Image (cartoon, rainbow, N blue to C red; front, side):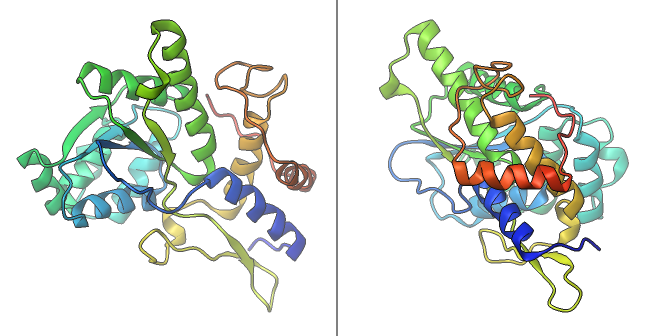
Length: 287
């Protein structure tokens, strides 16, 4: 049980909402849309993407790119998949990269989407070598280019705690591509985040214990077993602002240069500073 005061819950939710960016599926509209599902152990993101593509009537203008190799949290995704889907055995995914684990889950649990992929209605691409956030973006774009796919819109789906940094990584890749090859900005896809849910905490009236108060894009209650522990969540969101903040220790131009400059709002920075004092940590995590 994690006991918190209401003011701390407000700070956590302020930072979490900023990092998650957008829980609603962006409008598809005209032109071609590619949905990029980036590897993580947070299963509600996968569920929302696969359910959306299964349920949508006409998906001929939508591609699905599964992205992720074997990284520092792949073992967490394997464990989550095995726990959530008993039909998938540990042996069948033991050595698979994250993108292939997603594909295995899709084939076993989403027959409508699998049929759309097999018929060519939904174009499926798989990038299974990237091992960190920056490489996810770089190799996802390279995979689309190698396949001759240049979408009008790119909808990026990621663990809500990593959504804003992942978007910064995709923007960084396209900005670099524009500088190196003279790609016109008008040809760069519209980049939209889709975190599929925003992680909110609330407090039990009786014992002041923190608890989740979240549902996904479909309005379904999210099982705590498919997301983070509250302690790990606090560590992750504090560490994410550490990485986004453009200073000597961050990942921006003033630091490691993995992403472009990100303007973190002052209210988010103030909440972040208070959470750091409480004990949130900078978890070791590659870019």
